[in-house]
Image (tube, rainbow, N blue to C red; front, side, top):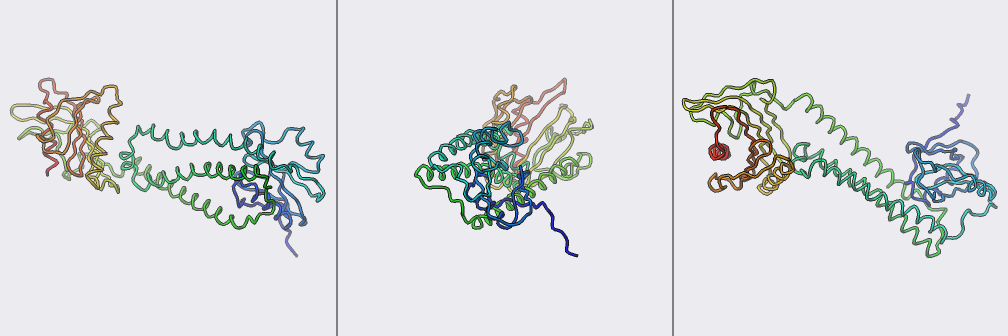
Length: 402
């Protein structure tokens, strides 16, 4: 017994919504094979077709005067336009992108619009809408993310990891390219129509179908890879895979800690249940990246220093990257309301390439030595003694020569 074929068939469109010629040709060719676009047959990137006996059917795309879609009030032509089309032998079928799709089985039915100049004017409305969406697209994909990270491009790249950062920006550029490609495609078609050249209703859509599917497949694959990388990084962060409590951390770090602040001092960790942690990471841009928080008390026979330090240490791949990163760290903190520049010993006195001191809630130093950047914030809570910056700055600077 022969199995009955499904009455509804789904297809991925082999061309973008704005490609009028390919879409019309594709739908007409499928009609000859016995697949007819169903009413409102475009949804979630797929097109649904009713199976029947193959025949010649013409499809035409008309530019919609207003944006269409699920959340638009203009998802189909108005009643008067539909009635006029019906009287001319054409039936409204569906909308896709900025276009209404009409169809006719009558070979004698006159074309909906035979004047290329009029078609060009209709396309201009679509192109104006595209121009209006270009800036919002650029804003939300580029300007807003930069604003959100406060310009900390290098720091974010190191924190996120180069694969996530670079792949994410590649996807952003790809997403920006898509509306730009649509804009220029419609401009080219509009100019052809203005010159009096008609739309090609029998274009070989198969030539561009492979490129279209390949591009879409590559984009979706890269997006899937990026999502997996982000989720993996988020899971590592949530589980604190790279973070160790200082009570359990016995390895030396490549910078000074509170235990180094006083000669022959005895350091006692203040177990507050937080802050006393070290996070060790590695990135293409910074093979060694350490976040270090320590709170406690160090004392010798003469002095007692109580408080804590927060350190960000970057050993980058080049001195240039280190200098750029140091400036970026300072620019980021300069936006804080408590920011105030501090006088520090000179870079020559400290034996580093550059040094910047400021208050951003707590006294902070950003130093560069070759490929290394050290940012340390030092807060003190001792009621009897406060170590001046001129004393603790050299201790951290000299530790970079280890």
